[in-house]
Length: 264
Ligand SMILES: O=P(O)(O)OC[C@H]1O[C@H](O[C@H]2O[C@H](CO)[C@@H](O)[C@H](O)[C@H]2O)[C@H](O)[C@@H](O)[C@@H]1O
Ligand SMILES: [Mg+2]
Image (spheres, rainbow, N blue to C red):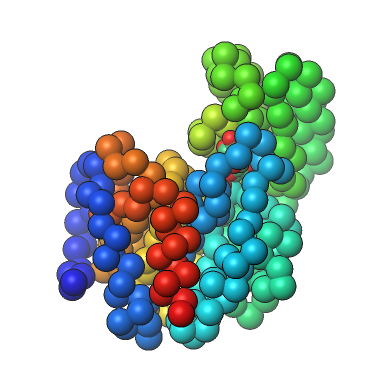
């Protein structure tokens, strides 16, 4: 399979099933950089943010793949960077957290996102008000806050309305980010696409073609960057929804199998 540079991202449309999209990694590891989303991509979705399960072999497979890629493997997630390391212990991969608002590069330098006092206070109010609704969970992520309604799907409208109101109070430095049964308030200046571009400007990522793998709307910005820079984009999940990703893999379990095979 060959990949041609395609400067035009084109219209979002359903991504075809295409597992061989990843074989280029093992054929030409020196050419590629791998960017991996976590929830819904590497890991199966769980009922609550804390209930995720990391298969014990996964960190080792990622480490082996990272070595093949000379370290050009990064995690790009909505989680906080501090949450990520324990998941993949004993390894410390380069990681962009909070949908790109914070980032630790391959040299271990961490760029944190500021937490203004007013935002700190707003998180407290959100936890007190919305967190009191049965089944609704508030996840404090430092410079971002997520409100989950997976256990109370009937609250979708209430959560969306409340978060819109909080966003208005927070001001223009913040944006609303909708995800899978979750609404978040995040720093406005960042995106996963920007994070991928930042990694690609530094060793060991620079000069490589990005392969971005994700499952959700926030991954679309990194799909767009990967497409624009002559790379590849893969969406995990049932093909069908509109996406910029050019290929798809049916489930996190299948992705883990492929990564484990590539890591050998
Ligand atoms: O960018 P990601 O790595 O995919 O992170 C996106 C969000 O993932 C988490 O929430 C989602 O996964 C939970 C665990 O499976 C699930 O319970 C929830 O319904 C999903 O929305 C995480 O809690 C968020 O902070 C991330 O932004
Ligand atoms: Mg995800």
